[in-house]
Image 1 (cartoon, rainbow, N blue to C red):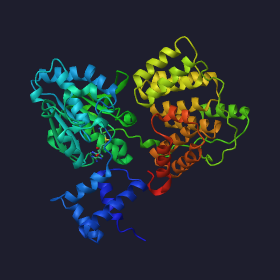
Image 2: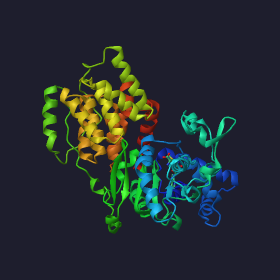
Image 3: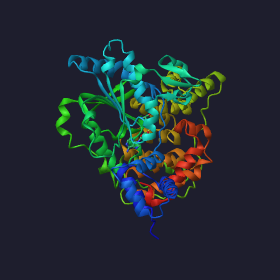
Image 4: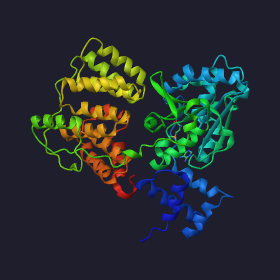
Length: 509
Ligand SMILES: C[S@@+](CC[C@H](N)C(=O)[O-])C[C@H]1O[C@@H](n2cnc3c(N)ncnc32)[C@H](O)[C@@H]1O
């Protein structure tokens, strides 16, 4: 039976560019039915007409407000802000000063405004900035409710993630809530903007800095490059772009120079590359990636031979069977920290890593591992911290160290898969994930990684199968290992994520 709401859902998807999987589509259907009910409309065609009415978009806005995720907080990803203050801002101010104009900055999916206000605070605090009244900060989001909240500038402790006392001076306290002071508010122009729309307003041109973090990952893969192209097009000469950490792989590297600073990275748009704006590389050539063949074996000898064979070549045309697991758990459990001090350092660093406080976690692990070899899990933790800080060279050293200690370490291969993925070596990431699975059938992380990579390249069937296998292993996997590879994400959330991905094959990509 044809779903009468299908056309409406298609319209919303086309308009927003958002990737809606089975769960999100189902939720959207319910919202639509609830709205139709509230308005006394029983024809989906009439409701669709109402949504398409450009003259009055009230109804459309209501639907969008229910659809998007507005998770954000002040100084989110502190390394970005360290880099912004130390490297980007002095250059931007100098440049703007020289041209006798205000710096121009844009928070391109600002949610409830914390990112835009963080920009405002950083600029106000920059000692050499004497033109604060003239500063141009733009903040946009598709969700009008978020924009309304951002305009009000009133926040509760959730927006500070428990660190509100650090930022108190920028706010007036109203009972248990915090209202941003006027001086930080008046620099910002808030507006509704759908990043998927073809043309952006002219005031968003010639930006010195654009923060477009943690939004691109919600779009359909086929829309991402076009959106990025429009955003890059809004950068002025030598402008800077910050993407979310998880979005590093999708930046158009032929247009942007990647700059590493303060344990993180961001991008700069250079004069030399302006001319290539229409030739943004996409990663589409990875679609149809050959799948490495792997046979399920039981003996470590066979494992070694398999690894050796897989090292340099990837036989084509053979399918991997992901459903059967029949090998013994060969996890290396030999090196577990024994004395309390050691395990305290590991646990403390693991907690900090799970709270995304990577720099402190790294300091602890670096000190802890100084002059000693470290156990497997300690090196894995150091590797994961480095990876999350985009310190790829060090992350690579970590997986090599683990695999040097034991070349049948599933965790070592999983870390390798993650580093390879960050390096955009997706074929290598798939091979390493498969090895990790081969070595430990109950290891959730490589299944999940495989699912994500296959999904990224549109291989719906394999992606679904990988997530399904992940689901089967999740309960059996040990909690510490889940924390090592997924940080703060609890098993329950991972379970939901996998279920979502498995539910409907058609909606997975
Ligand atoms: C997770 S928040 C990111 C907030 C902030 N940039 C940060 O990193 O903390 C994602 C935001 O993207 C917005 N968004 C989703 N689709 C959008 C679209 N098509 N155009 C503009 N904003 C969109 C959502 O409304 C949401 O507020």
